[in-house]
Amino acid sequence: MSWNLIGEHLFMVLAGGILSILVGLPLGILAYLAPKARPVILRVVDLFQTVPSLALLGIIMVFVGPGKATVVTGITLYSLLPIVRNTCLGLQEVDGGVKEAALGMGMSRGYRLLHVELPLAFPTIFTGIRIALVNAIGSTVFAAFVGGGGLGSVLNQAIRVQDMSLLMAGTAALMVIAVALDLSMSLFEGRVRKARGAGGKVFLIPAAALLVVFGALLPFGISGGAGQNVIRIYEGTVSEHRLLQQMAKMLVEDRTDLTVQIMDQMSAVNAFKELTGDNNTCDMMVSYDGTVLTTFLKLDTSDIPEGVTLYDFVNQVAGEQYDVRLLDKFGLDNTYAIAVPQSIADQYQLETVSDLIPVADQLVFGAEQEFFTLEGSMKYGPFVEFYGLNFKESKSVDLGLKYAAIENGGFDVTEVYATDGLNIKANLKILEDDRSFFPEYNGSYLVRNDLFEKYREVAPNLEEVLNLLGGQISTEEMAQMSYEVDVNGRDTAEVAREFLISKGFLEA
Image 1 (cartoon, helix red, strand yellow):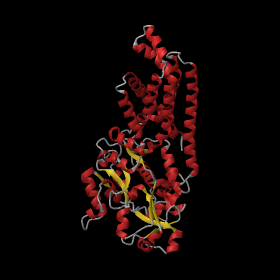
Image 2 (tube, rainbow, N blue to C red):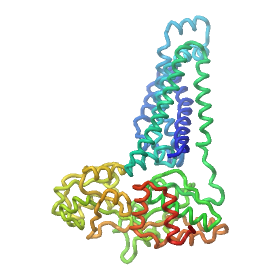
Image 3 (cartoon, rainbow, N blue to C red):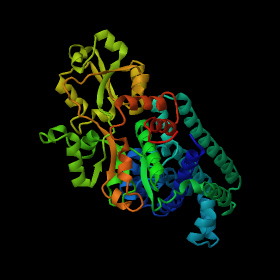
Image 4 (cartoon, one colour):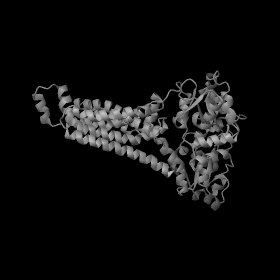
């Protein structure tokens, strides 16, 4: 965790908060002034609040693109409800006698609103703003899924590798931010209530403080331009992806005049959209032929013509549909695998997936939600049908909590990735897929076809450099490197550099 991540998180909270104030206050005033429009306005802001945070960000990203702009837009929409409602409510609660007195003094409608009603309603309005900003601190953790940065990436990593110290540090940072913001706004709120009726002056102190803090955080919200000779990659969500991204960065920057920019963390599906979009913000990513087939192309192994390899078929179709292709295979096969704790394997003498058939009704199967979806054939339903398995129960958990659940006895059988270092930590036994249900998942760099032509003059050897890792990384080697990062807590770049040195690609 770094100060940069904390700064990014605060920037997005305040940027979204300021925009929600600029939008919410007029909407609240309009709801107060136009009783007929009031139900519609309040219903719309209610609707934004009912949409799950991650789903809302995903919808916004389609139109805005990845990054902090999507997060700020999402926070703005999510924060409207308390601001709009409290603005309307505060104005409605202004004493009727005061309104009548202002009218009797000959004040116009606009003058009364600005100089009498809003100052008197401001304590209630300020409470809505306070609630909105504090709530936004928690919602912003979802920025990690759409390339926005912030503390969400820290929490995701900590949960996945069960690093309690990192999890507590990330949680503590969020709590400190929330408490500090709430206390400072509480202090302002107290002063505002004492200054009740003091006209527009009540707005000045909190508004000025908010703008000063936002101005100080502005550098954390401004991403440097990609430049002319920069290859852009979104940081992966798992250690294997980050290791391979660091290797690409080190090799390219060592052997060419290009720079590799590893941007904020983003999920694989969203990164692929940015790689293949018309206004692409990504030049390459780490992927697998099996993932491209089933997740990106929405195809299954049954669609592969006889005599054609999965890798060749994927490159052909991906090239035709998305103008992308996989480079040389690393050598690792990060396929789906079925695993059990070593104690379960010993108890039931399990070596292959077929060995589960006679004892499945005594065992509980658990995996991440994505494995239980109906999309694609490499999922739970087709898997148990193919092998004829009838488990006692099946449980769906978050990907980050899967390993904790199986270590704590939450279930007996799970699905894992073959190269995940956490398999070693959890002392899991990988069962042989003796009937070859799961396809290969050969790791490789997935690149845009125009990448090498784009940098032909600057780095004519770019493709050769990126293919240096072809056939150089075994499944076992990647599992060990992931273990070093996820379990031993070593720096990703350090582990990647050590590996490249051991292969002779970099000097010690």
